[in-house]
Image (cartoon, rainbow, N blue to C red; front, side, top):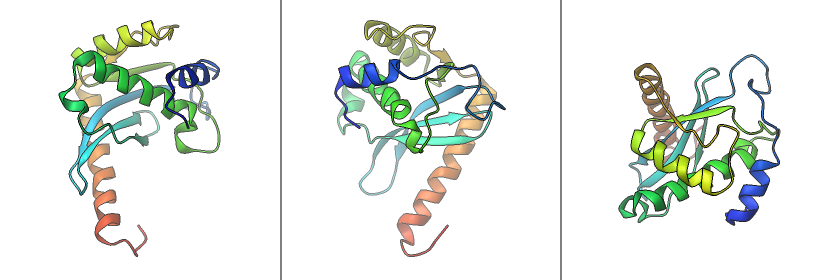
Length: 162
């Protein structure tokens, strides 16, 4: 999928938006954070988690110098990766649509990202990026740990199946 901002924005806005995930059994709420991947080559990725289902998606990597960029530039990168994630059906065959809401573990980023999304024409409440609570933060850490252990296993044993 193209990272062209206008294409991503129009593709994202064309998606349906529902309170519940496509299964109808959990909220269409997504928590996200920037996570460091400590294997070669090291880098950072956007980690998304639907806390109701435990479904995980990773998008990236982020550009290598993004951690030294201004908050506004980092917010723009994250906004584009979020839109790419959902416009690309979170890597699956069926569209999950736009999230009903999304939250991050970084309050400063939530504010900057909200302004960025608003400037891109993203509305309907999605410009109001929430901040996860302690329970959701812990769940995110747990799920990231599982994902990272699996990734390290695949890298360390490329011929084996997990």
